[in-house]
Structure formats: C-alpha cells, structure tokens
Image (cartoon, rainbow, N blue to C red; front, side):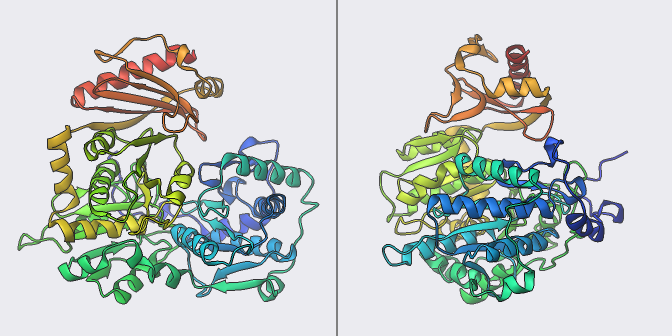
Length: 553
C-alpha cells in the first residue's frame, strides 16, 4: 500500500477527544510500569492519557513537586503559566492551578484566556525579572505543551527564573518527588476546587501577547521587512501562535497573511507525517505539505508569498518555505541565520560565540570559522544555551530539530527557550535586507564551504545496549578510520562545555556521525553527515552502525 504521508488526515487518523479527556480524569497510572511514571526528558514530562502516562494524578503530583522545589530554591515570585492547543493542555493547566492556589503560590495566567507560545512565556519571565526592583522575588514558569507531538499527547515543562528549560538537577528532583507523591496516593498534595483557585487572590493575569509582540522591534529589523513589502504567509499549524501572527502583522504593519487560523484539537486539517501520524512538525516536508503546495508558483510563475513559515503547537520550532527552495532543511537555515546575524548585529558582543548542538550540521562550524567566531558545541537540549544567551557571550543557540533563539539588537537576552516565531520572522528580515531568499543564501554558503549531506537513521538496541551506549568512554572505540578517512575525534563529552553527550560522536575531516540511545523506543539514533556526497554518507552510516554495534554488544 502506498504511503499516505503528506496527504490530509482521514477520520480513522483522528483521536477521540472525549475518550482522551475522560481518560485524563478517570485513569490511574500503574506505577509498576516505568512508562506510566513521571519522567522528564529534554522537554519536560510527556505522555498520553490513553496510555496512562499523562493523567490528572501525574499533573497534581508534578505541580506539588514544583511547589516544593521552588521552596527549596527560595523562589517566591509569581509563577507564569501557559498552555498550547493540545486537548490535554487545558485540563492539565486547570489541575496545576488547583494545586498552585492551594499552596498559596502567586500565579499569572493569560489575560486573554488564550494560548501561550513557549517563547512568549520565556520572554515574560525574563522581562519581569529584568524590570523588577532589586531584591524583588524572582518569577518562574510552567508551559503545558508536548510541542509537536500528536494530538493525543500532553506535556508539562518547568522553566526556572532564567526563563529556559530546567536543568537535569531540577527535573530529576521534581520527577523523583512527583513519583513519591504518586506512590503515596497523592498524600501531601494540596488542592482546591478550580473555581476557588481561579478566584483566589494569588491568581492574576498577564498579557503574554502584548508583552511579546510589542517588544519585537528590539530584536528584529521590522522596518526593513515593512519597507521592502515582504509578503509573508504564516501558518500557525493549529498551534499557540495563532493569535500572535495576526497581531504581529497588524501592530507592525507588515504584509502578513495568517494562512490557516483554524484551531482543532484533532488537527483534522493536517497532512500526515512520514509515519502516517498527525504530528505538527514544521521541519517535516510531509507535515508541511499543504504550506509547501501553497508556495508553488502559479500560472504567472510567481509564488503567493516571498516567505512562508510554519510553527509547531507551542511555537518553539520554525519551518521556512521559500519560492525557489521549498521547505528548508533546519540545518541549512541555521547556517544562513548565523551567517546573517553575526554580520548584521553591530550591537552584539564582538566576541560572542556561535552555539550549536553536536548533532547539528558541520557547515555551521565552517560558517563560524569564516566569520572569525568561536564555535561552542553542546549536548542535545536547549538548556545548554541558557547561560550564553543570558550573558550575551553566546548570542545565538540552535538545534538541528528546528529550534533556536538569539539576542536582541543591543545584545541583551530575548528568550532563553526556543523561539519559532522569532526565527520565522528573521527569514523575512533576511529577505528584505539582502534581497535574496534564505535558500539562495544557503547555496552561496555551500559554494564557499561545501555542500553537506545529512541524515538520521534508527538502529535496533536492547535496553541494556542503550544503557551501555549512554555510558561509553572514548577509550572504548578502537577504530582509527571511518569511511576511508582518519578519525580525528572520538567524543563522549561535548567539546563546548565538557558535559556528557549520552552517547558517542566520531569525526573525520569531511564527515561525522553521532549515536544516541532513544528515550522512548528500543533503538538508538545515528546522525551522520558527509561533505563527500550521498554515497559516502551511506558508507559512514553503515560503518557507524557496525562500529557502535561492536562496542555495545
């Protein structure tokens, strides 16, 4: 049977919202099943009520644990809370509010009773903490979102006062305490009825949208976009940015069209992803098929927009579609964004470094070198970019999964979480200032630095093998060559900060691979890249799998 990837979802693809919400309240997790316990990944706790991994007991316990963590850390300022458009996000936010109010925590919810993109919450925390008088208690936040995950999923993420994702020390403590509370039948969890929580003196409101949208001129050259008349097509993809894009266009007088303002918890309008699942992944050609089609040239040979963009459900990821190049590979756009920003942000620290994750393309390394900037390579997870963004020493941080943020025009911090809206608007600024599309600019970079071929594959591995992969040392790898080239580096720690990468990266002059265990499946992921073409990449992948299998056997 032919794959339905890229085609519009059919009724059998849609989640039963009633069953999903009923399960949230009615299902009690079995703590003997590791998949039903609280576990924080790089982006918080995620799961589905239908799989007993994201249910009311989980959220009550996690929120109480966050309250206790705040107390241990002396965090006594307001807690900002926002949610995306997933069906489980509203009940989870309500459950959290019941616990937060019962514990006397000052909570700020969206003033418009709407959806809150992850970057808007990060921006709100940072703005509050920056403008507060010295000695004022610091704010933190909770984002209720599973990001780009399917409609049946829920997610819950904690952002400390630095505004970005919590580190593993925080999430580990919160998860352990939440599981203790679950094991004790939620004894120790304080809670009050929702109506009382909403009416509590400690529950207030915050205009996330205005705070974010009105501050955009501090981080982007919107005048250039407006004056050039760049035609922008912005697709919120049914996510939390839906009201933001219209306001951005109106308040800043941009030639901007909200391509699809529909919000539907089933996402029935979506085209199916590569595996025939509904997934709001704005870096996927299959999930972005409808927007790509909209950008196809008409009878007169012109496209509907100069730049079209997509965002995932919490708007922390970006997808960039150009008339000449279609949907850009995230690595390609990151390289263009870095080259443009470090040449056009005179207010940034001239010594500021370029930040990337170790599975991002090596063309970024070559671009950074061409700019005369130091590259800082960190493990997977945006939390590693937080210190640099705060200090201005690392004015840009980006991930191969289409997540990035960068500092304001004056070099001060904008967000410390990924900002898909910001990166989407940057594509229009780049077009306005350079007169070229980001994909045309990427072609120029490859003419200068070479054209890499990049791919990710999965390989089967048992739980024991995945554990062994996560604990490797460089000495465990005895190979001296990879795909005909001498190995120049064997990494189990990120060169940028010495943190464990939870796997292995092997580098040669013109290629590299990185292997990391999956946190949810019995596989490990092999990321690989070659500057010598597709055939060489395939050889790298084959030898990488053989090398890793030999080490973890």
